[in-house]
Image 1: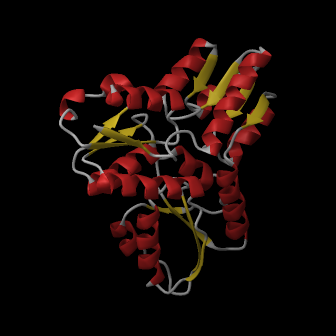
Image 2 (image 1 turned 60 degrees about the vertical axis):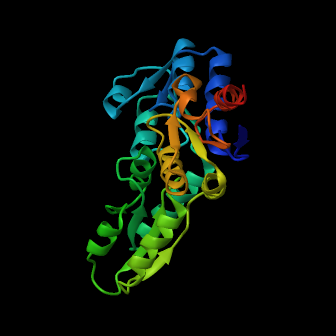
Length: 281
């Protein structure tokens, strides 16, 4: 059996930066420490941090109940009201928002202030998209499917600004922009899918195309890992989604020639290496 691991698999720059930020705060030893939402969509990392005393805040109400401590904003970012609330409560704010996400916040804030209708291409329930909506001066429209794009009805020549969730499927983004193009809006399109996502998706597609079986590693709630799985499944029918090496069923891989491995942006290098070793052994 041959094993080919994607070079782009694992932590992206924004996630690595956010995780390092939390561990740095733990090292400083100033308690209590909170993250607004899980720092990344990886249960192994979140559990390790919880064992070190880092608590996850799951809602605005939980944040409102705090009287002291450090609140770390994760790489997905948050809306303006969360920053205001942290300041109002007199808490310490450590901002680990990915710079690529920050750029979207600035774009939608500026364009919505100029009177443009913001259209976000992405998953409406994803924390990154919720954070982007929180920087718009007027309610944003979220589009995830071709059906939603086709059904969108704004007045002809409406001023719109189209942005994307950083981890969205690049090809799907292009397809949806094409549908919106036909509606004759006065539009500004900003491709805000980050380079790491684009590169990861392209490489995963290439490896899956030549592989006999494909393993995609990532947390069950990781949006970018789910998209990688969809991309690989189109190219290789024998594609398996696992979270850790314990989920790996070697029985289905025994007679396989080439096994490809890729992983989402929130998958630690250690887990990827464990899966690779298990396949090789």
